[in-house]
Length: 248
Length: 129
Image (cartoon, rainbow over all chains, first blue to last red; front, side, top):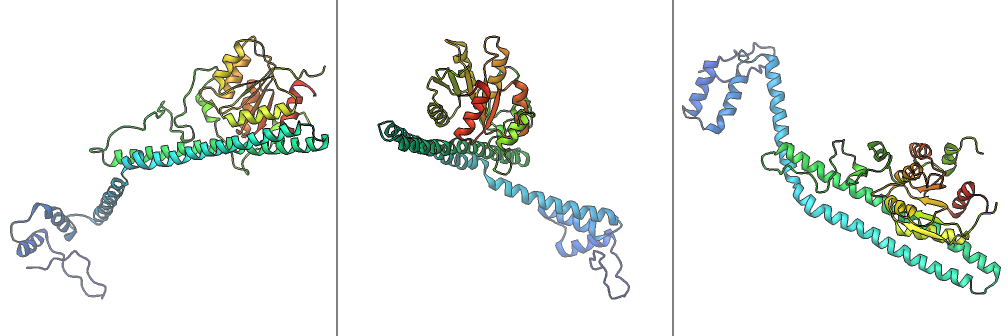
């Protein structure tokens, strides 16, 4: 009985051992395992037979088989990891928890801003209460600066709204991945209230409704970028120049 | 001709804090006849009912109707089309400014802004005060 040899040979310069024929491979397996092979082992035996004799598969086919085998293992591992993501938990627990926190931030900052402006109203009342004109002017200048600074709350709210939309988009993507890899068990639904109007998912504008207003279009939606970073935002002077090119 | 500080101004923004800020800044500039709306649709209802307004100061990013859509509605309305319209918004890309300009905006202020900027843009639109 010939020894099963997958044809690897050796590098010593000696003549490589003869490649076993298909029949010899089968005999070798029978000698070790008998005639009864469990079904779950058939796959590995087929692989052994295919790879054990280069006349069954050519070199290119053997390489392709090897790559497909690796790809199969990769897909199995990816499916297992994606299944472990548990999109239900993300949608039902993580996402609401995160959006609740972000909503609370907006509410808290709004409340704080309102209290700050209430204080400014009180200061302005003092400025109008008969104190010196110079002092009154100083107080009004100070309250003006405070009003200007309080606009942070508006921009904070807009940025947080965009973050919430991104989170919802991530949850949708996870669900889509699960649907793709486990279509047998995953529910084929999208996020509640999601706008799937046939266009590519625009993360920044998820959930935003469109209206029938004059000129309303997908192009208008594409203009809704929200607050930009300090380095990306156009300065007021640049906007003035764009709006009125001939005005100094 | 001197600006009438009793002119009617409509401010439009979905954040009530911003509405309060702009109202307070306008008050400091001497303008007290100010009304508010929280989005373009509500603003349109206010504009089309009752006495005429003299100036609109509007945010862009609102729902269900944006400030850009409101601007187009105003410019398409025979009774409203001549109204001065200042956009006050965090939308600061050049394409936004161009779109607003093409829609007929009178001036454009990017957030965050200061009182001096608001005054200078109002002056350019309604005259010195």
